[in-house]
Length: 389
Image 1 (cartoon, one colour):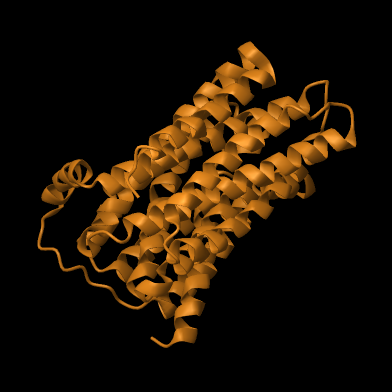
Image 2 (cartoon, rainbow, N blue to C red):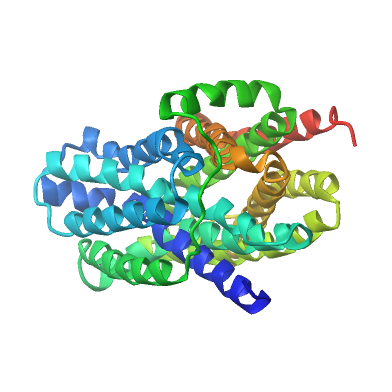
């Protein structure tokens, strides 16, 4: 492939990843209206958020390793095609049970993202691999950050079902684009599927770079989840009294942090991954501490919260690129399994952070969120101090 074709493919993969990953997060600000429309008890609406994320975790463990076994282009197209159909079904399902089941499958198939992310490393020269990964990760982070405000705005304009119809149409376009643009990639492994899964435990135990990078980002993504789980509660309470649209605007401001992957990719390509990781963790800590200065009832307070969101999103996005740039330098024939282990580990960190955030905010308010959110990257910083240069 020529240099221009490689760059175009990088941006296509980033955009496709954004469209896929967003399907996990569209439902988060809409749980109330979807629950009411489908007759879901208030105690059960949390499943609307949990099931897509749980499905994504299952997909990371069971589907992503298949990229080390089957031809990657065909595998991606099967998953994206299935995702398109399932997302479209969400726009029409009228009962809670089928909606829950479909949402879970949407999460499973969205794990195609983590086949597309390492895909770019197979067609990019080693010297610019960090920048290439940065472009694709920018798409992943944009999808995560834009999904919540976008679904809020679309629901406000039309109905909550509209966002799933729009997403399905977008995925159909990406299916065609990927079918035309993706080069074939046949893995060299001769392992069977069962042996492939068993080998993942050995890989995790024998790859210290993978373990470190996975734990670093589990702590950072945990902090990210702590912030974004609690901040809508904080901004909607009487001190700020923001509407759903106002909260969506703050979330939209956080999208500015998505510029981080491109910058981080260049830093990683120059060999400064360790110092970049340290700076990302320090920025995450500072973003939580700075939020303590935000005062409710003022525009300045809301602006400060938005700036903290940008800083945190920047730090987490950059750290993700540093981690993936490091693990993609490991054995190419194991890259999909390595990526699966990396993503699963930090996904668990995010899930734990999200669960702890709600409990912490209920008992200790925003000061408790500051303490919890800054403690996680501080722990990562302490662990980083034990790493050899």
